[in-house]
Image (cartoon, chains in turn cyan, purple, red, blue):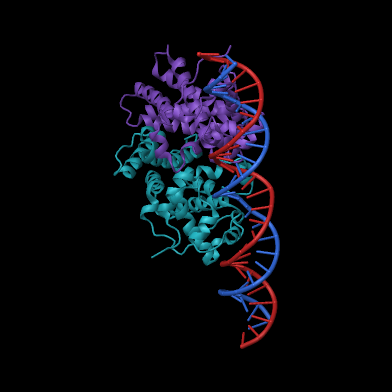
Length: 224
Length: 224
DNA sequence: TTTAAAATGATAGCAATACTATCACGGATT
DNA sequence: AATCCGTGATAGTATTGCTATCATTTTAAA
C-alpha cells in the first residue's frame, strides 16, 4: 500500500504544480529516472520530453528550467525525510533511540519505505547523493533562499537538531551537527561508491550498514 | 616574497601545462577571478578569452573544457593545502597541536599565506567552497578517478588521516574524519554566508574564528 | 449537452554555448 | 635562412536553452 500523502512544497518552486496532473507526475517520475541515468549535466527537457512522449514546451510550463526541477526534487526528498522522521519517532521516548532512527532514515529510508507511486525514492536518494549540492551551490543562492526554496531542508534539519538537544541540552552546535550528519551520510555513500580512498568504508556489500554504524559512532562520541 | 614552488599536478589534467607560459598563467589567474565573479555555470572560455585579450581557441589548447579547468583549480588548492600542512607541522611534535594547525589551515590558510603571484588563494578558496563539489559530482567520476584526477585530494587527506591516527591510534575512521573535516569546513563557511539556518555560526564578522573553534570542539570530542 | 476555458502538442525560431578547423603571423630555435 | 611553435583571427557547426504561436484535445462550468 502506498501512502497517499501529498508532499507539500513551496509553490515558488514550480510554475504549475506537477502533483496535480498526469503530465506533471510523469515529469517527476521520469525526471528522476533520467537524471539518475545520464547525470544532471547532460539531462535536459528535450530528452525528458522525448522519454515521456511530450514536448519541451510542455515541460517548461511546469518548471522554469532544469535547475528548478532539481531544486524541486531535492526539496521533495528533504520534506519526505522530515515526514518519515516525524512519524518514526512519534512514539519513541528515548532521544538516543530517536537519533538512531534518524541516522537509519538518512542512510536507508529509501530502501524500506512505501512509496508514492510516481516517485522512486531509492533513485531519488541517488540523485540527492550525486547532485543535490548543485541545488544550492549556485550564484543566485541568496535570491533563491529569500524565496524560500530551501525551507524544506531547514525544516528537516530543525527536527534533527531538536532531537540532538534532547540527547544533550548543552551541546553547543546542534544545527551544524545535524547538517553535517546529513551531508556526511550522503558524502560517505558517494565516496564509498566512487572515491573509496576518501573513506574508510571498504566493504561494498555491507556498505549501508557500515556507514550507519560509523555515523552512530560519530554521533555518540559527539554527544557524550 | 612569494614562494617559488611549482605546484605539481597530474598532467592528465591539462592539454598544455599552464604553469609553463604567460598565457597559461593568465588563464589560471583570471580563470579563478572570473569563476568567482560570475559563478561556474555562467563562466565559459569565450568570456575568459575576452577578459585576457586572447581567444577561445587558445584557451582550448590548454584545457579540454571548463570542467577540466575546474578540476585543475581545485587540485591546485588541494595540493597547496597539503604542502602547507606539511611545512607547518614539520617541526611540531605534539599531534594534537598538528591537528590544530590543520584545522586552522583548512579554515584560513588562504588569508595568511604568501602566494604564487598569479594565484589569488583567497579567491581560489571561495571557489573551492562554492564549486568544488561539482568537480567530482559528475557522471564520469569513475573514469576521471582512474585517470588520477583526484590524487591531490586523496594525498592531502591522507596526511590529515595520519595525524588523526597519531592523536588516537585506535580511532576506527581516520579517513572519513579527515574528509568530513575538510568538507565540513567549507560547508559551514558556505552556510554561514548564504544559508545561516543550516549552521550555528551566526556572527558574521567573527565567522572564521568561530568555525575554527567549532571544528576543534568536534575533533576533540571525536578523538577522546 | 453545449460551450468555454485550460492544458497539451506541434512546430518554428533564435541567441548562446561548446566546441573544431583552418590559416596567418611573429618569435624563437637550429 | 628555414622551420617550428605558440598564439591570434576568423569561421563554422551541432547542441542547448529557451520563447512564441497556433492547433488540438481534455476538463469543467453553464
